[in-house]
Image 1 (tube, one colour):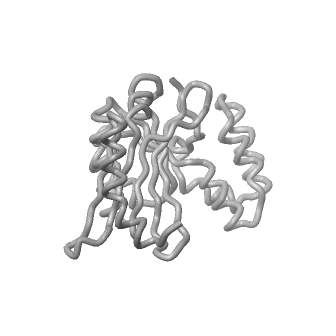
Image 2 (cartoon, helix red, strand yellow):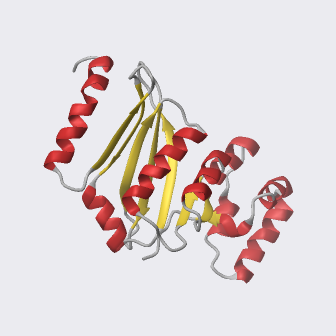
Image 3 (spheres, rainbow, N blue to C red):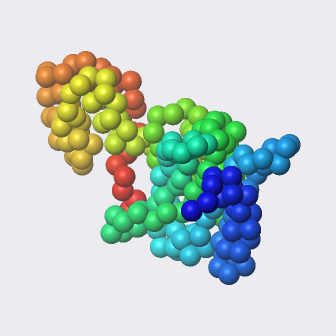
Length: 209
């Protein structure tokens, strides 16, 4: 299988061959002053076209820690089409999840998908991402992924977020107010926590066409 060092050393050739044999692929590598790996970005041309032509302008972003000798973080952005299936758009490998890495990642993403009128973005509550999105996509609307909010509720209060799930899925004001009142009566601490998060930013992982 080779070593991690050999894999990193072959990455430029791999990206070069991908672009030569698959028109539309976007791939970048950024190195430091010692020519050592810092960032990479990769997007498949057909997925970019599918997003532009077939999806609602909603993009969902997140990051995940990598295991292995050099650790690092993978940043990714996906969309969802009318059947609620996930469409990957772009990926990036970085040493760390920082403001600089998110800026670079979003700039490369912007090169792929271009300017959009009021795109909708969905992320977790990390302020690093929000600020960078606003700098790169000036007219973007921002929502907070309720999956992450549920995780925070479970972790912080050691309580299942059943009522919150119903709140998120409420499509009528009366229904929302009913479940919000129940939550206030049963778990006022959770309701107080949720009051600190603007309700209009609660976002399900759904992208309507």
